[in-house]
Amino acid sequence: MRVLGVDPGLTRCGVGVVEGVAGRPLTMVGVGVVRTPADADLGHRLVAVEQGIEQWLDEHRPQYVAVERVFSQHNVRTVMGTAQASAVAILCASRRGIPVALHTPSEVKAAVTGSGRADKAQVGAMVTRLLRLAAPPKPADAADALALAICHIWRAPAQNRLQRAVALHSSRAPRTPHAPKGRTP
Image 1 (cartoon, one colour):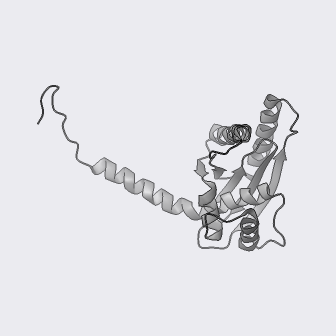
Image 2 (cartoon, rainbow, N blue to C red):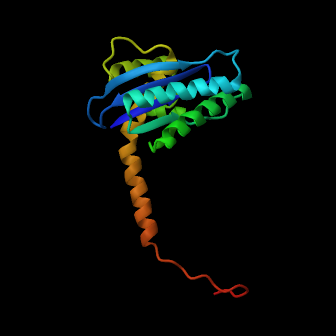
Image 3 (cartoon, rainbow, N blue to C red):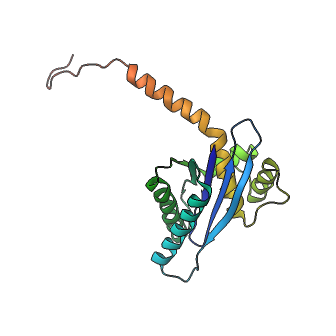
């Protein structure tokens, strides 16, 4: 399984590609950051993020894209930029028919470090260890993107089994007839 992880942001959008399957050693295929100038027009910045993500999709041909789920932050301006960059990543993948998964920051931290409260240094250290890298990827956005990809590779098989089980259960559940209006059964 090849996964492009995206740590969304307008100034720095972390991107990282990891290949492998759960239970086996993983391989980093590529890592980087799509940057936009903070003083540029919003529209130009979003186009730059789109172009950067499209380049990564063209070059690495992932089977899945894992994007960090935007969570509430105190700084509305920051959360808006993060949400906009996230939407661009989702759009780029969806346009190509690539499945997209959203993972919360605490879910990613728990998957990679064992603790949903891990700090950036701990995430970077575990990404370095898990991918057998010489040093943690810099900046932290790049390490976070790799952590998202790792999280998806490890969690996708279980999530897919759960989705299939729910779908199977739903298709087998007996349908109860609805009582006519005004009458109770």
